[in-house]
Image 1 (cartoon, rainbow, N blue to C red):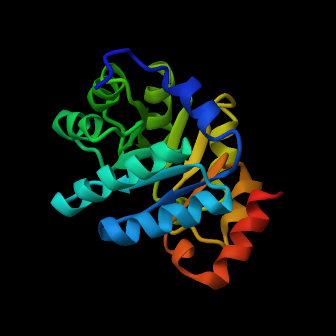
Image 2 (cartoon, rainbow, N blue to C red):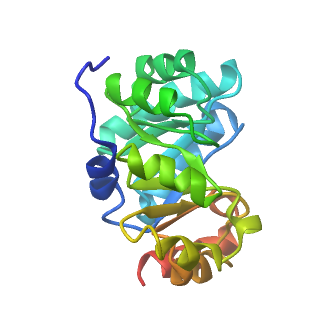
Image 3 (tube, rainbow, N blue to C red):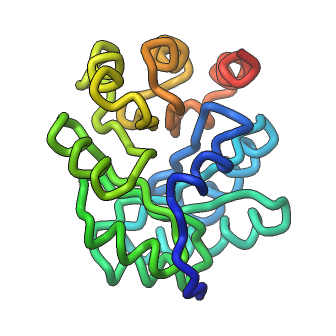
Length: 206
């Protein structure tokens, strides 16, 4: 496990440089997670998140981390709610953590463990707290409920912050959310639907 503190802003700048999409593979088990992670990588999505909510998820994370290492891809742990889960993610070889809300203790624990941190926000107050703490990449959650108007509204007072739209995102609404000002859209189920893959490819090639 790395002990070198990570600059989350710089890390995500590089990680998301190639494509405005991230894959979230929740509760799929190791075998299915590997299949869909490879689908994502083949499509051009470099960043994959495995949410951690049970022992099977931890096994899936370890498996996808190992496969990603062979291809030079970034794999992170999601639904990280406390420092214990940060340490479990780091032990599994995760490169970053994602949280549904803003907890600066989790952010600090992640960065100190060598993992970039992407906390969730839904209000201007949360964005401001994150901005003051030096964070420039944040998860907008739940994006489908926040709506497309949320992104230009937040960019007014926080022009340097980049948002990863998460929650209710798919191949059909991704382009609209990106056009509204999100920097990245996180998708999950769309990767399992062959009919959606062409739409995702179009989003990547924009």
